[in-house]
Image (cartoon, rainbow over all chains, first blue to last red; front, side, top):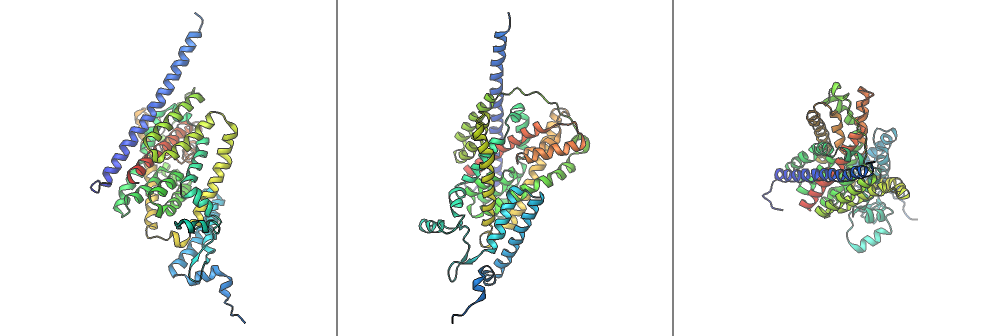
Length: 50
Length: 400
């Protein structure tokens, strides 16, 4: 560990990485839910009477 | 005729008389605290699941000190300081809790076992219903972790010790255990005991914090309930992808991530027998031995450390600030949604599944019987587990 790096910098870096990853997880959830819902919607549309 | 010293028969008393005054006082104090934990746990003031075994262990280990040789005092419960392999083999055959300590504690396995059980009782549907809102609140509820870390460094702890005590703000005791075992092995007992002690107090303390920071008219806000159409397949997809990515990013915390998500996946896959095992015998068995081991590790010679007092203050500060941060997050969501979000949900971002979510709902019900916030609170709570694990993983990676 570089001795010149202070605790405030480290905690800021930690928080920044945590925010990016947490919102990354939220994006993953949105994609999963979006993709599967779109698939089920299109399947429902395909099976609807024409 | 041989001379008989009556104290040789009652060695617990003999060692108390023969020890240094500070150790003797420490032992008496810890016995008293252990007994208090048992009664407070039995009455429901503290969390009985962990505090009763811990209290019994504390009282018994501090009473049961004996002369191991003519000059050495110790117990036949556990020796956490042993590192020499030959000596370890010897004590494994003498100290009755040594096998559990050596094979499940010192490598963090017990924290992972508890996490598997937590995964099996966690419903990820709530976080999937409102992922951005839940994650935002969870990030605010890490305020305690982030503010405590620099304070701990300025108070004289090194980076590893400061990181370990500040993780208490994430309100996930197995995570605190895992982090402190890796980063601050010399202080993991007091840090983990502080974490469990304060987490048991959240149920009693956080309602006051809610009432202090959230006026009655905000507490009664009704939230819109959407019908969830999230399937088990979506939940499994989320769990396995997130688990893989987090393990890829932070291999040092991969055992924790894997343990949590395997519980989630087994539950969503509907493998009933395994779910029953994870959420029953495994979770409660691990919690029982975790409490008991933490109790017996609180032996005066091991735990009396000049840093214990500062750990007690920092642990409380961390949890208090996280609660305040969570409520600030709740207010932020209130303003973003133009008054449609109940700020009390914020407190649930301090993970501690499911305690904080239940506390939030209970406080809301006291004001408005028709205001249901539990699904949102559970979502924030599950997100809190994920963000706490991520922050713990970053700390471990940075300071290991």
